[in-house]
Image 1 (cartoon, rainbow, N blue to C red):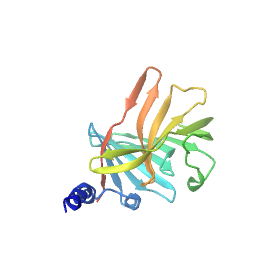
Image 2: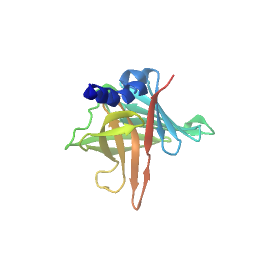
Image 3: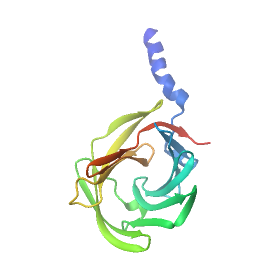
Image 4: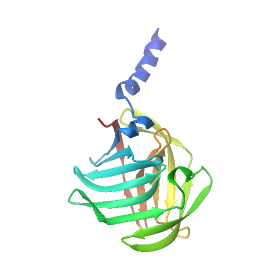
Length: 194
C-alpha cells in the first residue's frame, strides 16, 4: 500500500500541472523566463510555429520557425507592434516539412539565403545536436535536444544554443555566445494558453 501511495504522489504534479503537449500548439503554449519575459508558441502553417517574445509585457519580436526549430523569419516590434520594415527572412531551399532535424553526433550544414532589410546575402548555417537531456519547467519535465547553431562554419565563438523539445515540436533560444560574452535565457515555466 505504501508503494502505491508513493507512486501516486510522484505522478500527481504532472497530472495537476496539465503539461502542454504538441496538440496545444494549435491554441498556444507560453514559456516564461526567470526574469518575467515570456514567449508564446503557436502553430502557424503545417511545419511552422510562430514565437512571439514579450519583455515587460510588451511584444519585442516575432519569429517564424520551420519544424519548430529553424528561424525562417524575424520581425522586430517597435512600441509593442510588429514593424514589417524590420523583417528579415532566411531561406533554406526546402519546404518546412522537408528540412531535416539535426542528429546527435552529426553536423548538419545548410546553405541559407538571407534577406536582412532588403540586403540579400548567402551563408552556410551549421547545426550540431548534443545528446538529449531532460529539463523541468515548473511542474513539467520534457526531453530536450540541445542544438548548437553556427552562423559561419569557421567561427566557433559566435553561436546560439537552441533547446528543441521533440514532444512539442518546438524550440526556444537558450543561450547566445559572442567573443567574450554571452546571453542566457533561463526558462522556468511552461503552460497551455487559453
